[in-house]
Amino acid sequence: MLHMDVLLLIYHFSRASQGNILEIGPYVGGSTIAAAFGARDSRTRKTIVNIEAGGQLKHFRLSSRNTINDLRKNLVRFGVAGDVSLINGRSFDEATISEVRQRLSNGDVGLFVFDADNNVRGDLDSYGELLNDGCWVVIDDYFGARKSSATPGAG
Image (cartoon, rainbow, N blue to C red):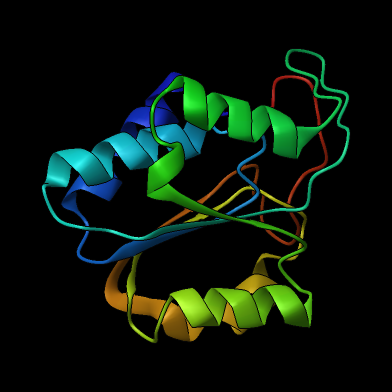
C-alpha cells in the first residue's frame, strides 16, 4: 500500500510524462487509479498496461482474498476500468512479456511503476527497451540489493 505522497507523485508523473504507463504489481489499484487520473488530466491519450499476478495476500492494513477481483472492482468504482489494460500473470512469464509487447512498443513508456517481487533487475531486463529516454521510474519498497518483503510500516 503506497503512501498518499507517492500516489500524488504517480499522478504527477503520469500527467507530465511523455508516453504510456507500465505498472507491475498494482495490488488493489491505488497507484493505477492515481496514474489513470493523471493520464486523463494530461489530455494526451496514454495506454496504461498493468501486470498483476493475482491471488490472496494477507496484509496488516489491507488484505485481499483475490487481488485481481479487488483490483477490477476498484478500477470500476473510480471510473477508470476502461482506461486500463490489465494482464493477469507474472511479469517474468514469457506469455506475459509477449502480451505486454503486443500492447507497447520500444520507447513507448514514460512512466514505469514497480511494486511486485524482488526482481527489479529481471523486469528491467524484460521491459527496459520499452522505456523512453525521459521515463519516470517508481520502485516501491526497494532498499538496495533486494526489494523488501511485506514489513509493517514499509511501503
